[in-house]
Image (tube, rainbow, N blue to C red; front, side, top):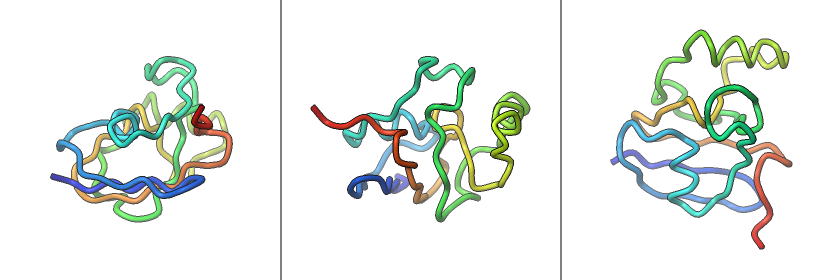
Length: 103
């Protein structure tokens, strides 16, 4: 199974089933990512930055790229956690404000 690491206010690492979205992987690992649209690719609140393993994520589709472009986030390391599916080991950084403080 692929190993996913999220870097935010601390490090969250674990294995998930292949083809799991990064958003669902975060949930499995206990990290609550913001996702205002409910994971439907109509906002960018779940945006993450791929640090390692970019080629181990599903290909970016037109709708995801269009949303990222509108937010001037067209660099290849930016992905929407609700759309990027894990195919192999990956490390992503969660920008400050994109994760929910545990409470």
